[in-house]
Length: 158
Image (cartoon, rainbow, N blue to C red; front, side):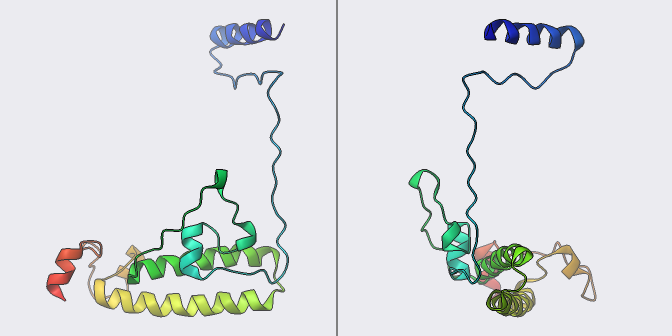
């Protein structure tokens, strides 16, 4: 019976030109999603660990099939900015649902200050990180060489 229903649906799709969305077989199990509820004042990883683990919150660190990423980021200014940006995003999402968590908000403010200061230092040394930052100078230097990831070229200039 199930096979006949699938065949009828395919024939109807061919005749009408409708690609359809397929039919879920009767024996297919339904998914059982689970989203852990975050309590107030959860423990947090340091920003550099959080970006590697994929979450700032150990309580949400649920490795897929037991696989974990423990390879640390290189100690570079760009990686530090990336880690701070990731932590700000994670904390911002947390604060969307936990507005009264003062400790998390203070950590958010601290990371925001560090990110702002680090970005200013980074851009002074390597140039703008975004096109918007390129608009803040006297000339447009978004495409100026060398790019920050061109390690050898930056070493020669330093």
